[in-house]
Image (cartoon, rainbow, N blue to C red):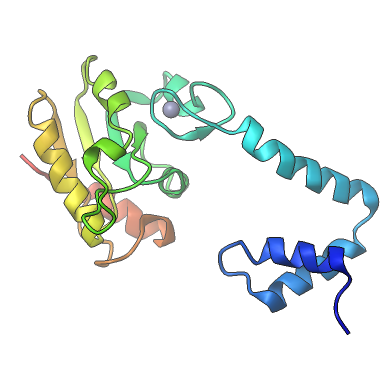
Length: 198
Ligand SMILES: [Zn+2]
């Protein structure tokens, strides 16, 4: 017997998510059916609001529900230190260690020869704007993958035009790994052990 059409439809939506196969999606739909109508409506509304209310910080590119994210607005943070990461997920990973007191800049991707992505496809224009103000240090925290390393080298070359210290997080992260999967101690070690690029 086939699932009712609407049941099947919700399953199909869940299978769009990473790590969710058919079986997992089925379990989720059964679970949803156990919820009361009010919770389901709230769930649906949160999904509808997600795209509408999430924007990217005009300064650093991080996910936010405000034009300028809380980190860029926070005067207790060192606004003269910028940690460059690939994606919004990496900011949340770094924030978990609670040691880093600077700001971030989210590239929204990496340079990739294979995909034909160059530095111009990244969130660089707003970084250049930030460099009009004095900056003490830029920490490049792209992932230790081939694309992440290529991007780090390009950035270092690009930033050499500016009067700013540039460092790269240490190799505490295993080659090919991703910042957002690393545990807090590993992230902390790689941040503390960062090396000057020039
Ligand atoms: Zn920001």
